[in-house]
Amino acid sequence: MKPEPEKLIPKHGGYERTKTWQLADLIYDITVRFCDKYVDRRSRTHDQMVQAARSGCQNLQEGSVDSAVSKKIELKLTGIAKGSLEELRRDFKKHLQHRELPEWPPNHPALTRFKAVRCASLEQFRAWVAEEARLAGQERKNTDGKNTDGHGQARTATNEASSGVRAGPCSSVPARVPSPEVCAANGALSLLNLCIHLIGRQMEAQADAFEKEGGFTERLYRVRSARRTAP
Image (cartoon, rainbow, N blue to C red; front, side, top):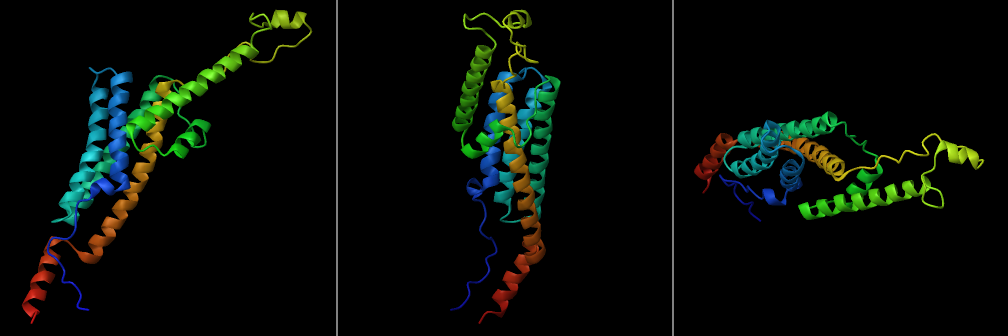
């Protein structure tokens, strides 16, 4: 069977089906909602975070479309997208740091549950945050129950000592439970870590293809040469 001749304009686009664009699009939706809720809309940080999220998504899209005529431009725009999302990741980290809120380690129980959900939409992300808030409320209720006696009175070192029971080191201090703001920020960071990692691998594949196949000029030369030598 005769091989199909190389086309001057190769297959391109299809960014909606790529995991990197899907993640970047979700991150953009999450960032807009997060900033509107937890960041002053008049602040520079609000605009900076939203624009960084939009840039990540938009440049992946444009790079996919422009790959038709320039693999070099595709690689450049993909790199810009990665840089924008790295900037956004830094802003989320600073948000937690400035408010003295915890940044969770990768093995945090809530993050483990988050990764198992595999959120693909803003609605699923919000449902996860709501579920974590419910679990946190239950944990707070259970902790409060342990810190009260059978009559609903708060346990203290005095009344526990009088009853012959030694007070624990934190018996009257409820455990710190995550707020929706903490859940949303850490969930966004988890998605950003994954997306940035995948974009890095995508750039490696693009660079490899560019080295092997060349750009538009090289492809034009091959197509014209093949046409001249065709019977």
